[in-house]
Length: 226
Ligand code: PRT
Ligand code: ZN
Image (cartoon, rainbow, N blue to C red; front, side, top):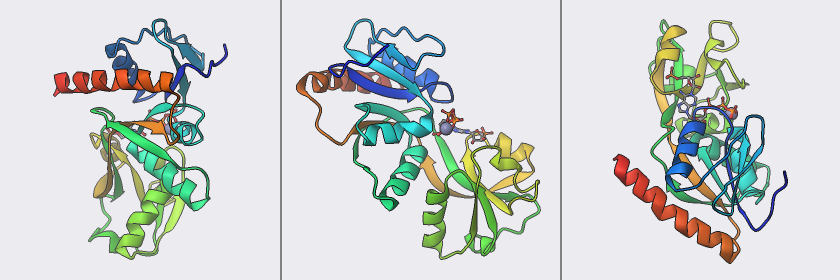
C-alpha cells in the first residue's frame, strides 16, 4: 500500500492506551476505517483520509516533519519531543487543533514509601529514573534542584527497588502501579491529555476542507460526552 499525497494523513497510535479512543473518535466523525492487524497504513473507505498506525513517540515528529498532516498524541509526549527538538534545532512547528477528552494522566515524581520527602529539594543530588528527561529537567531547573537523570524507556517503577535510582518521574493515572511497587506520588510535574495536532505548514485546499469538516464533528462528539 502506498500513500497518495492528496489524501489527508493522520497518525495515531497503533496499539496502546490511545488507540481505541482514536479509532472511536474517527468512527464518530463518520470516517469508515478498515484497520487490519500488522498494517502501517489504513485507507478510509468513504473519505480521502489515510491513517498511519505508529508508536505514540513517533507521532509529534511525523507531524513536525510534515510527513503526516494531523496526529493524535498525549501532551506528555508532545511536550517532551518539542523540548528535545528545540534543543537540537530540529523542526518543531505544529499547531494544536483540539485538546481531547481522553488519555488523561499526570507526570509525577514518586519515591519509596519510606523516603522522607519534604518537597523537590529532598531530591538534591539524587538519581531519578524517567522516560521524560526534558520535562523533568525543566521542572527541577525551575525548582533550582540538581539531580541525575537515569533514562529508562520502560519499567521505570522498578528502578528504586532495583537500586538503579532513588526516585522516579513517571506517568500516573489511578496510582495502582506506584502502590504495587511500594512507591508514593510526591509531586505532579505535568498534567496531560490527548491532543489533535496539525503540521506547521499550510495544507493544500482539498486537505484543509477535510480538516474543516472533521473539527466541528469532533467538537460535537466531545460536547455530547460532557
Ligand atoms: O507502543 P507505544 O510506544 O505506542 O506505546 P506506549 O507503551 O509508549 O504508550 P501507552 O499506550 O502506555 O500510553 C500512551 C499514552 O497514553 C501516554 O503517552 C499518555 O499520554 C497516555 N496515558 C494515560 C498513559 C497512562 N494514562 C498511564 N497510566 N500512559 C501510560 N500510563 C502507564 C504509566 O506509565 C504506568 O506504567 O500506566 C502505568 C500507571 O497507571 P496507573 O493507573 O497504575 O497509575
Ligand atoms: Zn511510546
